[in-house]
Image (cartoon, rainbow, N blue to C red; front, top):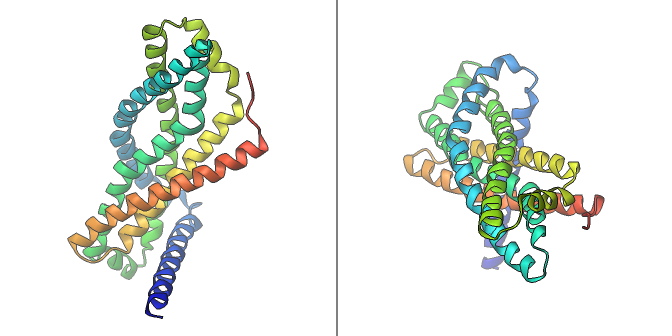
Length: 263
């Protein structure tokens, strides 16, 4: 009985946290139409997120593209289809790597900064002071961060694709000796426009999730420096779990609606 009571309390606490997260996110979206009130904060957040994620995403994507080319290229060469490496690199980058890499960097670099910033405001009672002055802290702080993270996540996808394709090109063409024409011809044989649309949609959703979780953890953290640090850690872990879960769901629905093309 004691164990069942503990499980029930933990489940109730988790459901309560999910409900609070939805409340904050929906409240942040409710006044999105009033752009004048959050435009400059949105610009500042976009500038900050672009600065802290653009270089790391390039450094991550280059070895990812080379790794995919290494693993797939060796297998394809054994099967006598070395030119298919380009297809594998581009399909993997566009469908999965680009939105996941952009979301994880938004969560790790930008989301942690959002959580610590809002958490510091929370422990200094700045959020309460905003409410006293009839300023909704969610509209002022959460709304621009939601849209900024989504926008930058979408903008990072082309960088991931270009950097990963460059890494795959260097390994597949320079090291393995595949001709550039065969590499790019294979790259374009399986990729369709809907793949890019779904990738940008996933990146937008993942950036939105990262910002929403980061803001929620910052606004509900314990009122101490230790509480802010724990909130940053929890926000990163929860975001990763949600991103991978939503990625599976969206990919499964997409493959059911649009079956992959064959060579």
